[in-house]
Length: 335
Image (cartoon, rainbow, N blue to C red; front, side, top):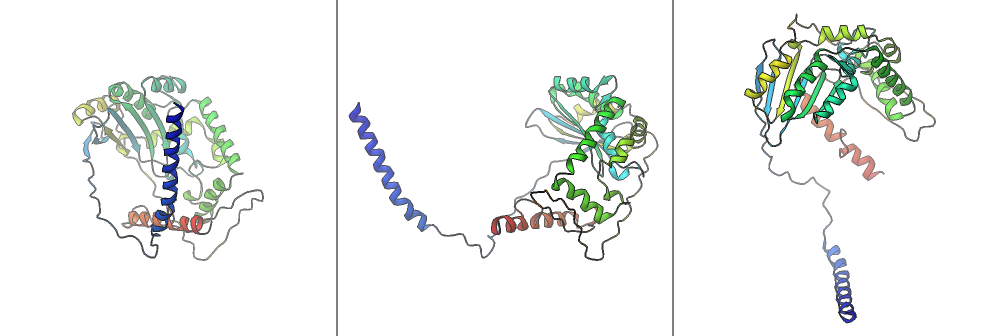
Protein backbone atom coordinates (compact mmCIF):
# COMPACT_ATOMS: atom_id res chain seq x y z
CA UNK A 1 0.00 0.00 0.00
CA UNK A 2 2.82 2.39 0.89
CA UNK A 3 4.56 1.62 -2.42
CA UNK A 4 1.44 2.49 -4.46
CA UNK A 5 0.94 5.70 -2.47
CA UNK A 6 4.58 6.68 -3.01
CA UNK A 7 4.28 6.09 -6.76
CA UNK A 8 1.07 8.17 -6.92
CA UNK A 9 2.73 11.05 -5.10
CA UNK A 10 5.71 10.83 -7.42
CA UNK A 11 3.50 10.93 -10.51
CA UNK A 12 1.51 13.90 -9.17
CA UNK A 13 4.71 15.77 -8.37
CA UNK A 14 6.01 15.17 -11.90
CA UNK A 15 2.77 16.53 -13.39
CA UNK A 16 2.97 19.66 -11.24
CA UNK A 17 6.57 20.24 -12.24
CA UNK A 18 5.65 19.89 -15.91
CA UNK A 19 2.76 22.35 -15.53
CA UNK A 20 4.98 24.81 -13.69
CA UNK A 21 7.47 24.67 -16.54
CA UNK A 22 4.85 25.22 -19.23
CA UNK A 23 2.79 27.89 -17.41
CA UNK A 24 5.25 30.82 -17.81
CA UNK A 25 5.57 30.03 -21.52
CA UNK A 26 1.80 30.19 -21.95
CA UNK A 27 1.58 33.41 -19.97
CA UNK A 28 4.29 34.95 -22.08
CA UNK A 29 2.59 33.83 -25.26
CA UNK A 30 -0.66 35.58 -24.34
CA UNK A 31 -1.15 38.90 -26.08
CA UNK A 32 -2.05 41.96 -24.08
CA UNK A 33 -5.49 43.37 -24.88
CA UNK A 34 -5.49 46.17 -27.42
CA UNK A 35 -7.07 49.11 -25.65
CA UNK A 36 -6.22 51.66 -28.33
CA UNK A 37 -9.65 51.20 -29.92
CA UNK A 38 -12.99 49.79 -28.79
CA UNK A 39 -13.79 46.19 -29.77
CA UNK A 40 -15.83 45.64 -32.89
CA UNK A 41 -19.55 45.46 -32.28
CA UNK A 42 -21.25 42.16 -32.86
CA UNK A 43 -24.66 41.69 -34.45
CA UNK A 44 -27.52 43.38 -32.61
CA UNK A 45 -29.72 40.87 -30.82
CA UNK A 46 -33.33 41.00 -31.84
CA UNK A 47 -35.56 42.26 -29.04
CA UNK A 48 -38.93 40.55 -29.02
CA UNK A 49 -41.27 42.22 -26.58
CA UNK A 50 -44.23 40.26 -25.21
CA UNK A 51 -47.68 41.20 -26.35
CA UNK A 52 -49.63 43.52 -24.04
CA UNK A 53 -53.33 42.75 -23.94
CA UNK A 54 -55.54 45.64 -22.81
CA UNK A 55 -59.03 45.56 -21.35
CA UNK A 56 -61.14 47.77 -19.08
CA UNK A 57 -63.26 46.89 -16.06
CA UNK A 58 -66.86 48.10 -15.85
CA UNK A 59 -65.84 51.03 -13.65
CA UNK A 60 -63.23 52.27 -16.12
CA UNK A 61 -60.14 50.75 -14.49
CA UNK A 62 -57.65 49.87 -17.22
CA UNK A 63 -56.17 46.34 -17.22
CA UNK A 64 -52.94 45.42 -19.01
CA UNK A 65 -51.91 41.77 -19.20
CA UNK A 66 -48.64 40.16 -20.25
CA UNK A 67 -48.87 36.36 -20.27
CA UNK A 68 -45.82 34.45 -19.01
CA UNK A 69 -46.35 30.75 -18.39
CA UNK A 70 -42.84 29.62 -17.47
CA UNK A 71 -43.56 29.53 -13.71
CA UNK A 72 -46.89 29.38 -11.80
CA UNK A 73 -46.61 32.91 -10.43
CA UNK A 74 -48.44 36.15 -11.13
CA UNK A 75 -47.50 39.77 -10.47
CA UNK A 76 -50.32 42.31 -10.11
CA UNK A 77 -49.41 46.00 -9.90
CA UNK A 78 -51.95 48.73 -9.30
CA UNK A 79 -50.37 51.93 -10.57
CA UNK A 80 -52.06 55.16 -9.49
CA UNK A 81 -51.10 58.38 -11.25
CA UNK A 82 -50.55 60.31 -8.04
CA UNK A 83 -47.13 60.86 -6.54
CA UNK A 84 -45.14 63.36 -4.57
CA UNK A 85 -45.42 65.88 -7.38
CA UNK A 86 -49.13 66.02 -6.48
CA UNK A 87 -48.46 66.96 -2.84
CA UNK A 88 -50.48 70.05 -1.91
CA UNK A 89 -48.54 73.11 -0.82
CA UNK A 90 -47.61 72.84 2.84
CA UNK A 91 -48.08 69.04 2.79
CA UNK A 92 -44.89 67.86 1.12
CA UNK A 93 -44.61 64.11 1.73
CA UNK A 94 -48.34 63.36 1.98
CA UNK A 95 -48.33 61.10 -1.12
CA UNK A 96 -45.40 59.11 0.24
CA UNK A 97 -46.97 58.76 3.69
CA UNK A 98 -50.35 57.82 2.21
CA UNK A 99 -48.79 55.00 0.19
CA UNK A 100 -46.80 53.79 3.21
CA UNK A 101 -49.97 53.66 5.32
CA UNK A 102 -52.08 51.64 2.86
CA UNK A 103 -51.09 48.26 4.35
CA UNK A 104 -51.03 49.48 7.96
CA UNK A 105 -54.72 48.70 8.32
CA UNK A 106 -57.34 48.10 5.62
CA UNK A 107 -60.88 46.76 5.44
CA UNK A 108 -61.45 44.83 8.66
CA UNK A 109 -57.80 43.87 9.19
CA UNK A 110 -55.06 45.49 11.24
CA UNK A 111 -51.52 45.81 9.93
CA UNK A 112 -50.47 42.58 11.66
CA UNK A 113 -53.50 40.71 10.33
CA UNK A 114 -52.69 41.88 6.80
CA UNK A 115 -49.09 40.71 7.18
CA UNK A 116 -50.23 37.32 8.52
CA UNK A 117 -52.72 36.85 5.70
CA UNK A 118 -50.13 37.69 3.04
CA UNK A 119 -47.60 35.33 4.59
CA UNK A 120 -50.15 32.52 4.83
CA UNK A 121 -50.75 32.79 1.07
CA UNK A 122 -47.04 32.67 0.31
CA UNK A 123 -47.39 36.09 -1.29
CA UNK A 124 -45.63 39.42 -1.17
CA UNK A 125 -47.59 42.66 -0.91
CA UNK A 126 -45.90 46.06 -0.95
CA UNK A 127 -46.80 49.72 -1.37
CA UNK A 128 -44.73 52.71 -2.37
CA UNK A 129 -44.80 56.13 -4.01
CA UNK A 130 -42.44 58.05 -6.28
CA UNK A 131 -42.65 61.61 -7.54
CA UNK A 132 -44.81 60.49 -10.47
CA UNK A 133 -47.02 57.68 -9.16
CA UNK A 134 -48.06 55.44 -6.28
CA UNK A 135 -48.32 51.66 -6.45
CA UNK A 136 -49.62 48.57 -4.70
CA UNK A 137 -47.78 45.42 -5.81
CA UNK A 138 -48.79 41.80 -5.30
CA UNK A 139 -46.69 38.74 -6.13
CA UNK A 140 -48.46 35.46 -5.47
CA UNK A 141 -48.66 31.82 -6.64
CA UNK A 142 -51.41 31.41 -9.20
CA UNK A 143 -53.28 28.94 -7.04
CA UNK A 144 -53.64 31.61 -4.32
CA UNK A 145 -54.55 34.49 -6.64
CA UNK A 146 -58.30 34.36 -6.00
CA UNK A 147 -57.71 34.71 -2.25
CA UNK A 148 -54.99 37.35 -2.54
CA UNK A 149 -56.77 39.82 -4.84
CA UNK A 150 -59.48 40.81 -2.28
CA UNK A 151 -56.70 41.46 0.24
CA UNK A 152 -54.89 43.65 -2.28
CA UNK A 153 -58.12 45.48 -3.07
CA UNK A 154 -58.71 46.23 0.62
CA UNK A 155 -55.22 47.70 0.92
CA UNK A 156 -55.59 49.85 -2.21
CA UNK A 157 -59.23 50.92 -1.88
CA UNK A 158 -60.19 50.67 1.79
CA UNK A 159 -57.23 51.73 3.99
CA UNK A 160 -58.20 52.83 7.49
CA UNK A 161 -55.16 55.01 8.33
CA UNK A 162 -55.08 54.19 12.07
CA UNK A 163 -53.55 56.99 14.15
CA UNK A 164 -51.31 54.62 16.12
CA UNK A 165 -49.67 53.29 12.96
CA UNK A 166 -49.25 56.81 11.60
CA UNK A 167 -47.46 57.81 14.78
CA UNK A 168 -45.13 54.83 14.42
CA UNK A 169 -44.27 55.56 10.80
CA UNK A 170 -43.91 59.25 11.61
CA UNK A 171 -41.34 58.49 14.30
CA UNK A 172 -39.47 56.10 12.01
CA UNK A 173 -39.15 58.76 9.31
CA UNK A 174 -38.10 61.49 11.71
CA UNK A 175 -35.46 59.16 13.13
CA UNK A 176 -34.24 58.31 9.64
CA UNK A 177 -33.89 62.01 8.81
CA UNK A 178 -31.78 62.57 11.93
CA UNK A 179 -29.59 59.53 11.20
CA UNK A 180 -29.06 60.64 7.61
CA UNK A 181 -27.36 63.83 8.79
CA UNK A 182 -24.24 61.79 9.63
CA UNK A 183 -24.04 60.12 6.21
CA UNK A 184 -22.60 62.24 3.37
CA UNK A 185 -24.22 59.96 0.77
CA UNK A 186 -27.63 60.63 2.34
CA UNK A 187 -27.02 64.37 2.76
CA UNK A 188 -25.81 65.09 -0.77
CA UNK A 189 -29.03 64.06 -2.57
CA UNK A 190 -31.43 66.44 -0.81
CA UNK A 191 -28.79 69.19 -0.75
CA UNK A 192 -28.21 68.90 -4.51
CA UNK A 193 -31.94 68.99 -5.24
CA UNK A 194 -32.36 72.04 -3.03
CA UNK A 195 -29.53 73.90 -4.81
CA UNK A 196 -30.78 73.01 -8.33
CA UNK A 197 -34.54 73.46 -7.86
CA UNK A 198 -34.74 75.86 -4.93
CA UNK A 199 -36.78 75.77 -1.75
CA UNK A 200 -40.20 76.47 -3.27
CA UNK A 201 -40.21 73.99 -6.18
CA UNK A 202 -41.57 70.52 -5.34
CA UNK A 203 -38.47 68.78 -6.70
CA UNK A 204 -36.34 70.79 -4.29
CA UNK A 205 -37.72 68.81 -1.34
CA UNK A 206 -37.44 65.04 -0.89
CA UNK A 207 -40.41 62.80 -1.63
CA UNK A 208 -40.89 62.00 2.08
CA UNK A 209 -41.24 65.69 2.94
CA UNK A 210 -39.60 67.60 5.75
CA UNK A 211 -39.49 67.13 9.51
CA UNK A 212 -42.09 69.87 9.87
CA UNK A 213 -44.58 68.36 7.41
CA UNK A 214 -44.09 64.83 8.71
CA UNK A 215 -44.82 65.98 12.27
CA UNK A 216 -48.02 67.69 11.11
CA UNK A 217 -49.62 64.85 9.15
CA UNK A 218 -53.02 63.64 10.40
CA UNK A 219 -55.12 60.62 9.37
CA UNK A 220 -57.65 63.07 7.91
CA UNK A 221 -55.05 64.52 5.52
CA UNK A 222 -54.06 61.08 4.31
CA UNK A 223 -57.69 60.05 3.83
CA UNK A 224 -58.36 63.24 1.86
CA UNK A 225 -55.40 62.64 -0.47
CA UNK A 226 -56.44 59.02 -0.97
CA UNK A 227 -60.05 59.95 -1.72
CA UNK A 228 -59.01 62.64 -4.20
CA UNK A 229 -56.32 60.75 -6.12
CA UNK A 230 -56.97 56.99 -5.79
CA UNK A 231 -59.72 56.53 -8.38
CA UNK A 232 -60.21 53.90 -11.11
CA UNK A 233 -59.99 56.45 -13.91
CA UNK A 234 -56.60 57.53 -12.56
CA UNK A 235 -55.13 54.03 -12.25
CA UNK A 236 -54.03 50.99 -14.23
CA UNK A 237 -53.86 47.32 -13.23
CA UNK A 238 -50.81 45.67 -14.76
CA UNK A 239 -50.76 41.86 -14.62
CA UNK A 240 -47.92 39.59 -15.67
CA UNK A 241 -47.69 35.87 -15.13
CA UNK A 242 -49.21 32.45 -15.60
CA UNK A 243 -52.76 33.63 -16.33
CA UNK A 244 -54.91 34.43 -19.35
CA UNK A 245 -57.29 37.29 -19.94
CA UNK A 246 -60.24 34.91 -19.74
CA UNK A 247 -59.25 33.73 -16.25
CA UNK A 248 -58.01 37.00 -14.75
CA UNK A 249 -60.78 39.41 -15.78
CA UNK A 250 -63.57 37.85 -13.65
CA UNK A 251 -61.25 37.85 -10.62
CA UNK A 252 -60.27 41.49 -11.15
CA UNK A 253 -63.86 42.51 -11.70
CA UNK A 254 -64.88 40.84 -8.45
CA UNK A 255 -62.05 42.43 -6.45
CA UNK A 256 -61.92 45.93 -7.98
CA UNK A 257 -65.27 46.31 -9.75
CA UNK A 258 -66.90 48.03 -6.77
CA UNK A 259 -64.33 50.83 -6.86
CA UNK A 260 -66.54 53.86 -7.46
CA UNK A 261 -65.98 55.64 -10.77
CA UNK A 262 -66.14 59.23 -9.57
CA UNK A 263 -65.24 62.48 -11.31
CA UNK A 264 -61.93 62.60 -13.19
CA UNK A 265 -58.86 63.43 -11.12
CA UNK A 266 -57.46 66.91 -11.61
CA UNK A 267 -53.66 66.94 -11.44
CA UNK A 268 -51.78 70.20 -11.19
CA UNK A 269 -48.87 70.28 -13.60
CA UNK A 270 -45.45 70.62 -12.02
CA UNK A 271 -44.16 74.09 -12.89
CA UNK A 272 -41.02 74.38 -14.96
CA UNK A 273 -37.94 74.86 -12.83
CA UNK A 274 -35.74 77.89 -13.33
CA UNK A 275 -32.54 76.81 -15.04
CA UNK A 276 -29.21 77.68 -13.46
CA UNK A 277 -27.41 80.31 -15.54
CA UNK A 278 -24.09 80.74 -13.72
CA UNK A 279 -21.47 78.48 -12.21
CA UNK A 280 -22.11 77.91 -8.55
CA UNK A 281 -20.28 75.99 -5.83
CA UNK A 282 -22.07 74.87 -2.67
CA UNK A 283 -20.21 73.27 0.23
CA UNK A 284 -21.92 71.19 2.91
CA UNK A 285 -19.30 71.00 5.64
CA UNK A 286 -19.14 67.65 7.46
CA UNK A 287 -15.73 67.66 9.20
CA UNK A 288 -15.88 64.08 10.52
CA UNK A 289 -16.87 62.48 7.25
CA UNK A 290 -14.41 59.86 5.98
CA UNK A 291 -15.36 60.39 2.32
CA UNK A 292 -16.54 63.29 0.20
CA UNK A 293 -19.52 63.34 -2.12
CA UNK A 294 -19.55 65.45 -5.29
CA UNK A 295 -22.52 66.32 -7.50
CA UNK A 296 -22.39 68.33 -10.71
CA UNK A 297 -25.49 69.16 -12.72
CA UNK A 298 -28.46 71.34 -13.45
CA UNK A 299 -32.14 71.06 -14.36
CA UNK A 300 -32.59 68.20 -16.82
CA UNK A 301 -35.06 67.60 -19.63
CA UNK A 302 -38.73 66.90 -19.10
CA UNK A 303 -39.79 63.28 -18.77
CA UNK A 304 -41.81 63.43 -21.98
CA UNK A 305 -39.01 64.77 -24.18
CA UNK A 306 -38.56 62.67 -27.36
CA UNK A 307 -34.89 62.14 -26.53
CA UNK A 308 -35.49 60.94 -22.96
CA UNK A 309 -34.47 57.30 -23.48
CA UNK A 310 -31.49 58.20 -25.66
CA UNK A 311 -30.31 60.53 -22.88
CA UNK A 312 -30.80 57.76 -20.32
CA UNK A 313 -28.51 55.48 -22.36
CA UNK A 314 -26.00 58.30 -22.76
CA UNK A 315 -26.02 59.00 -19.03
CA UNK A 316 -25.56 55.30 -18.21
CA UNK A 317 -22.53 55.04 -20.48
CA UNK A 318 -20.89 58.18 -19.18
CA UNK A 319 -21.56 57.94 -15.45
CA UNK A 320 -24.81 56.24 -14.59
CA UNK A 321 -23.52 52.77 -13.69
CA UNK A 322 -20.62 51.10 -11.91
CA UNK A 323 -19.02 50.22 -15.27
CA UNK A 324 -19.51 53.72 -16.71
CA UNK A 325 -16.59 55.56 -18.27
CA UNK A 326 -16.37 58.10 -15.47
CA UNK A 327 -16.35 55.46 -12.74
CA UNK A 328 -13.81 53.31 -14.56
CA UNK A 329 -11.54 56.30 -15.01
CA UNK A 330 -11.72 57.30 -11.36
CA UNK A 331 -11.49 53.85 -9.80
CA UNK A 332 -9.47 51.74 -12.24
CA UNK A 333 -7.05 54.28 -13.68
CA UNK A 334 -6.65 56.70 -10.80
CA UNK A 335 -7.52 54.55 -7.79
